[in-house]
Image 1 (cartoon, rainbow, N blue to C red):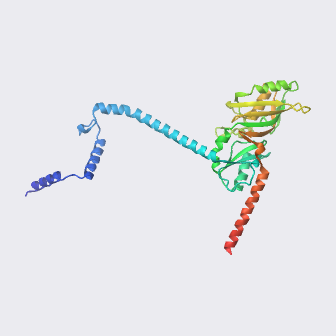
Image 2 (cartoon, one colour):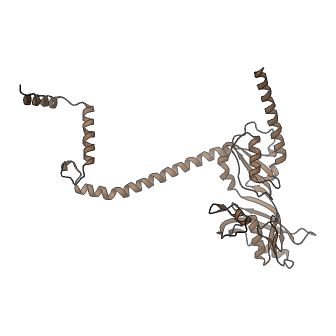
Image 3 (tube, rainbow, N blue to C red):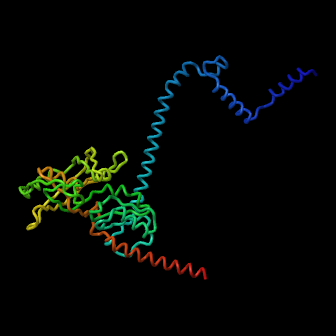
Length: 348
């Protein structure tokens, strides 16, 4: 048999041999990859290329449909993620244990998912309070739900463990403050932490004048944040610039004031005015005091501030920081003593 006849017979035999499913799928994959490499306009295998009409309609609708599909998928994914996060926060919030001085009973052994009500003392920063508690409860996850200035006292909510994921919830709650202001004197920080830089007449102001002026700040108002604040401008905190004597433009922000009461103590210093304020998130009480003075044609600065409420929580139910630290330190010392005994017994 000649070579040509042998080749022909082999070809016939291969053609008549049944193809396996693997061979068929392999052949289809190879054909598909070849068609993808050849341009639609090529004359080679033109019958396998898409028709002009289907090609043009596909190319024209593909980008828009692809982008809309992509945006829809992204939006759906974001919504799904947001929903999951919200559900998780709600789940954690429902299982949070609030620990205050008035709750009674011993302090918890496990501090995960706890919320502490603290009566912050004078001269402590909110960060200092969290740092002190972080070491005593033996966990890194400790954060506060709303800053109190060092020169302010009162209710500070501190979240521990999983409860740190609920900080936003507590920050969004309404707050109540009480304090005092001094008429006729202005400072750059709007409080007594910086020297008086301007004075103005105030003796002519009656109690009615002060009350009427305060009422104009109740409701939804636009407030200009003070330079001495932690708001950032181009990566720099405003108070850092203010301490260098730099003043920059700030944008007024919408805030909500639910109540603003003012009164003078009978027989007290007429230049000193007491106030009580209930307000929403982001309200600067110092700015309210400053704006109150300006609104009456004089000036004023805040001389004391105490936060009394956050939502349903009251400072009356809060732990005095020094008393809480004393309890926690005693417990930690006892734990360390027992651990040392255990280690000693194992060693010998």
